Image (cartoon, rainbow, N blue to C red; front, side):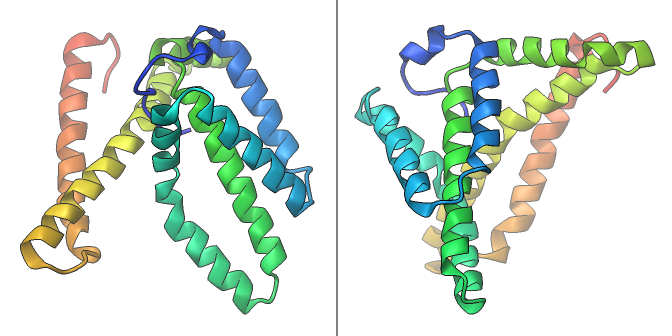
Length: 200
């Protein structure tokens, strides 16, 4: 669910955000009731084909969004090989790929303002407890939109380090990444202070 927008408009843009989020919640819950690896693979194949129906550019964009999951997938494969439960590991991996693919499909085809409006409606009962729901919904949106930016920043810093040293980066890019994120967060905070009505 951690993505920006698709590079071009799709038919999903016209579907109400509330319906998409409702279907996403239902599908995500239903995935955990599937215990057959073959069924999970067929569903993932169907979702991948559905992405391809919107064109090669959308399909390639969606596949790139799954790349950050690769380290976690590798760790899970080695762990379940060690524990001699590869089938269980593959089932977890397929669930992860399915949930993230569906979440990206929704967030990439939904405007930020629509998601914010829905979150505000969900949190509205909390206003009776004097809780600042506007700040909570804004925090959720910032998290959703900042995550792909952070991943892209990490990719850029890794390429820069590799070009300068000729070595594959690991921990060397962590500090520059943290500093750049803190700088971006400060800019966002200053913008919110000058434009919003609540404290940051």
